[in-house]
Length: 70
Image 1 (tube, helix red, strand yellow):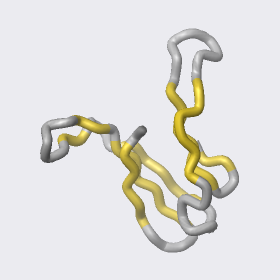
Image 2 (cartoon, rainbow, N blue to C red; image 1 turned 90 degrees about the horizontal axis):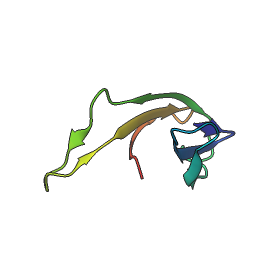
Image 3 (tube, rainbow, N blue to C red; image 1 turned 30 degrees about the vertical axis):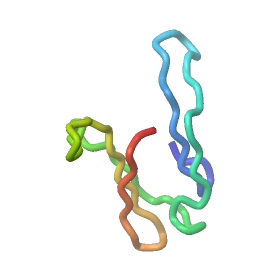
Image 4 (cartoon, helix red, strand yellow; image 1 turned 135 degrees about the horizontal axis):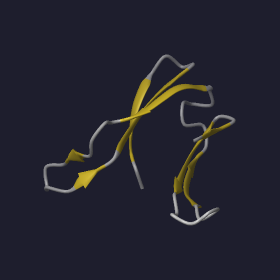
């Protein structure tokens, strides 16, 4: 989720209202607005075999960044 210029990761619970904030990245795009975000359609495998969820964001800074879900 984007709040202002911060990227905020939440852990989603199965019960109503059951989510909690896990991490907040202030100025995710150097203080510029985040203009687009999309989750990879499937978990990505790292060299050590670990699978992680990956988020891609684009910002007004004209950069694309990849984020590993916390």
